[in-house]
Image (cartoon, rainbow, N blue to C red; front, side, top):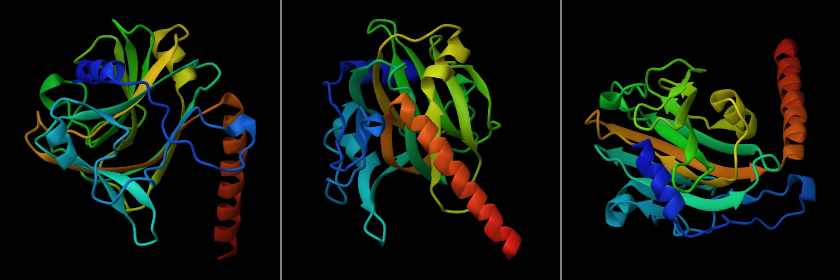
Length: 249
């Protein structure tokens, strides 16, 4: 499964994502960004490339819209395994931060990414590195069963590593914000610094567990190293404000 998504990402056209016109300073400008706002509701996001049956992919991945007007990508897999991706080459030391939002509505029954017979994920975001012939990858997952913080080698591809960011059914339908430093993660997981990033990919699958899965994705952005410090300060300020408010209540 992981090998297929690697080959899909590396076989795509070179796409730079969707640039958002704003006044962010250069130190916070993304090298790749996708907000899904430019696509019509109910359609497949046209800038993304498909590995496998394109007609089937269009039944899994469709743009949806919330009541407030925000558009996002909804993935609904019924015993299916189709990946989509964007290819963009860049240096991971200069752009080491990947940020996105996601949420899950259905988890693949018995999903456990450590073994081939149960290797389905409600939601997964990949970063692909190094050689086009034998790439390495990190797969960040929302797992059905595995504990948050678990890391291990993919059962499908020995040059792929899996990191569990979320696990089990959510306690609310709210979006979960993720921010990862994949440059540092790569060094910890593989033991040395990565080469050039080749692209990113998304996967919601439920084929080997013969079940179903549904997840939403939004606001993917690859950011420069300087942005990480700004994000950490902002998130600390938000957490402090929430703590102060709870103490007053």
